[in-house]
Image: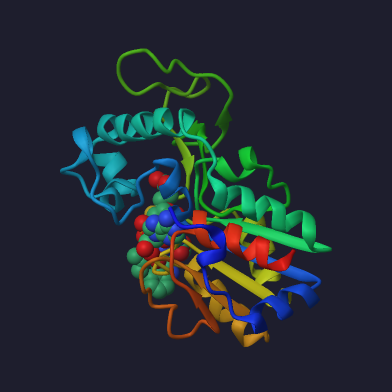
Length: 249
Ligand code: BJW
């Protein structure tokens, strides 16, 4: 892995960040890639290699085959539990401490930002550690993780499901409102490790840009956002974000 100082960062971006009072960040699966959590676009390995993750994260997949979807999430929950936050997560937590106002908006469900020390944050797509009743939506504190079959709601007997947002489901209203407010008010928006294709999260950078924010993409690959971003920092988040923090020192 290259040294943080090897990442070229435009002095204009450094100056803008030094003068900023409100910075926001939008993260996606790419920031957890260096913690060993596969992104949605990457081919899955092992047992789940033949399933498209985007096709498992839907209400219809759960209706068709609840066991398969439950097992996929159980497998991912285990991987998340044994993963550790990486330098990219920690750099964002360090940035939060640096600015008077900082909001971290994540599409990830893995809880690694919190474990890295981020506090003022919004989870747009839920959290894989929680489960809820598939009928009533009530979050259930305890369930039998080791038993056979998909566990049932202790109140109504319906299947339990992960408390995450699947395609065609509404995002939590408060979380989306906070994210949209941050996008409209921030001076700089860092967009890290997302393919910028899944809405409504993918609309936040454009909203920030329209309200005058500087939009910065951190991603080793081009995305639909790349041409609209004011700055593109090509590289893995675990290298680029620590370099950005160092450049501000
Ligand atoms: C690195 C890296 C490294 C690699 N460092 N980077 C408007 C227009 C068109 C469509 C829609 C629209 N509004 C709504 C829709 C429909 C749909 C949608 O957007 N579809 C698109 C596919 C077009 N949206 C929805 O359905 C949303 N709901 C909604 O809008 O409700 C209203 C509604 C109701 C009824 C009907 C229609 C609308 C809900 C979206 C929920 C998404 N849920 C998931 C699963 C969450 C739970 C789980 O984890 O299992 O969220 S799907 C998946 O995609 C997950 C992610 O959070 C999300 C985004 O993916 P992300 O994070 O960008 O990951 P990847 O893998 O795609 O990209 C990784 C990136 O990292 C890559 O770019 C790499 O290069 C990069 N990378 N290593 C930095 N080291």
